[in-house]
Length: 127
Image: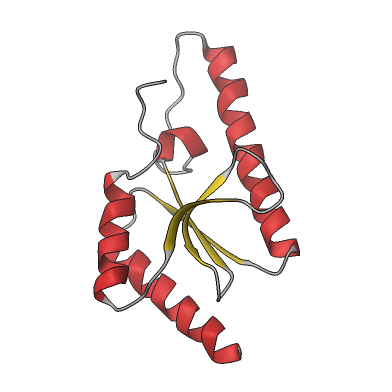
């Protein structure tokens, strides 16, 4: 697991390139306010929008998640904690007034970028 990349994954980089090309500026890997050791993949601080690009295996994608047969109980517990942590983080941020957008790694980057762009423009129009 220590060799598993958690930052700058191919889906993250693809979405970030599209957002940058669209003229949007953002921050990456920003700590979650009030929760130590957790980060947000892409952040629009002024609009208070947090984007997470979750890996199918690590975050339990309903379409693509696999369940290891070796040491199955340990993995079930580990992956269950990941999903619970995701829910807790989302709840914490939404309670603080943030818009939280979660996407799976298998989603088309152009579609993700369009949805993010629409949310940012909508949120900035409110202010």
